Image (cartoon, rainbow, N blue to C red; front, top):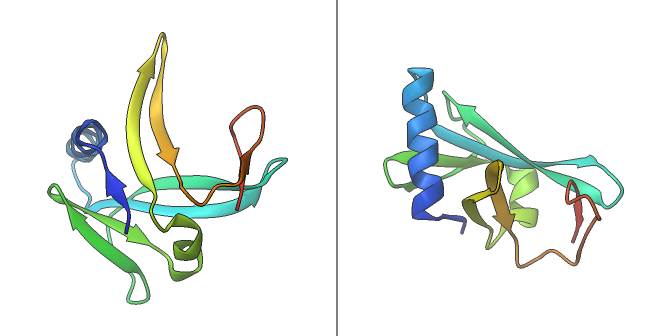
Length: 106
């Protein structure tokens, strides 16, 4: 199960409204960086038959089956720190994260 904080939910709904279309977000992981994996968040307009989907706060969270094993228990938050802001991924399965925070290891 993936959860999204209320702050992140508001930001996702705002971005979907700004786009003028969309069902929700697609989450996944890709191989990259010094630790091996990086999170991918995209806005989604369609759900594929093989996708796993969850409904939350008026939008859909879509995950491809291959990424789901890396995202179990993930919490998505939206954080502002000084001039920086963005989505933050809190994953209980993470064993290590690279120094720059771009990639992680399970």
